[in-house]
Image (cartoon, rainbow, N blue to C red; front, side):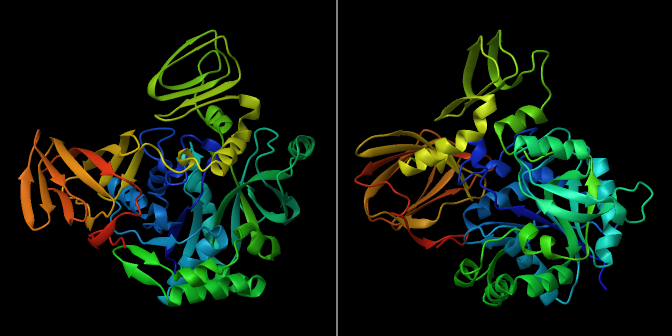
Length: 478
């Protein structure tokens, strides 16, 4: 039986409680919230050094985020990681089943470690030791989950009730049977859980053999595994992307591993983990996860305070000054500012819902939008014009395309560009410009060794991304 060990990084969360930083097209796992790495990059990097079985991960993400995932992995030298693309999120059970079935189809039966991409773990050596603790149990066919040692009554997490009478043989006696999984409690119940000492926070991290997961899904949720089998049978691949059949995947029920597998499994155990864990699911979580100053404040960016206490203040794009406030969250982005009472900041989801009802783009994208070739940032917009700043990475190019409803004027700010406009190809450098008429095939390519910066002025009657007709694209976009 195979002893291959494959981490499965689950990258499909939306992170709406961290709005306005986290948005639909760039949720929290792609942001650097703690250090210079994004949460996704930190999750992948902390996997290095887990015993002799450690290997590169597989990643499951939303199709809309595929190039963002690929670029962030490339930036930390993970170049050939398989990336499974969900046309729409269906929770963790279908996501992990994609990887498990793929491994079995390749005549392998690895141990899978399923990890959300958006967690913080401060004590990485302890995390590694607990993974090593769990490996023998998963190797022998147990379904392992990791329960976090609770530090406070918490109403935002589910809990695992451990069964100390069914503790497995281990020198540290931190491997237990599982009596039950319980939902997020109210405060009174959470306080009782802490007093009882029988409950751990449910981390959403799991370890099992691929064949064990698939067998449990066949036994408990054949509707899920049937659709995932069909989706993989009709999959397509390009570069490192694995695209399951959209029709079959979208017909799959949405369910977590907890409900689909763990609650009904017999051979389930929990390994207790005390490693400075946080799922940073809210701005309160960010405040708790970071080092606080003597007044209980956490600040990020250009912040000036006077008589402020127990607050989280983040300034990403300008000076933020605060006077005489306490227990407050202030988050500044280039196009939004969030201000809220720290005790009620979980209700930011109500703001997101209101913005969605109003059709506001601020829930979807930032002003700076990542693209496989680099990024663009909206600078100004009126009735008949739009101005953007484009940044193309060295060797990158936009697709060969045309627009029906707008023309474009490109001004090179820095770098060297090769511009295709109709049948003409031109090299342009700083302070030079060109004009792209409506209904004209065109392409922009960075042929230099430094980022190419371009100011793009669009004029016309419509500026939506759906007015792009692509003829050739090195990134596989249709």
